[in-house]
Image (cartoon, rainbow, N blue to C red; front, side, top):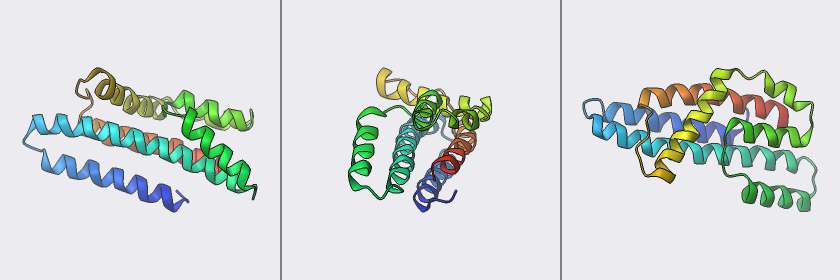
Length: 155
């Protein structure tokens, strides 16, 4: 990752996951609650990361009005960091970017979508995340590759 903002946010995720694994080793109920907490937090950070990358790209224009417009539209319209939604945003800039995005493995696509679907379970259905803490750790590791590719395209 090049962006200090993304490095910081993703480092926070990794610290939270590792801390959760350590403190809940012998407590399955706590582990389930922490996994529910983490998928919500991670999904929100992924939304923030997408917003950040598009705002950074808009900043390249040196046009404050364009930057404000992009920022406003992303914040209003982008609320679900599923792979397909991110792909649609990237394609909106240039259709050719979709070929770079299409190279993302299904494992990475499935991982980011798993985090989002688990978040939806927690936030909209009031149930616990079905992912374990180790699942979440692996999902994040895989999903991070999507942001590295996005960063290469947008920055």
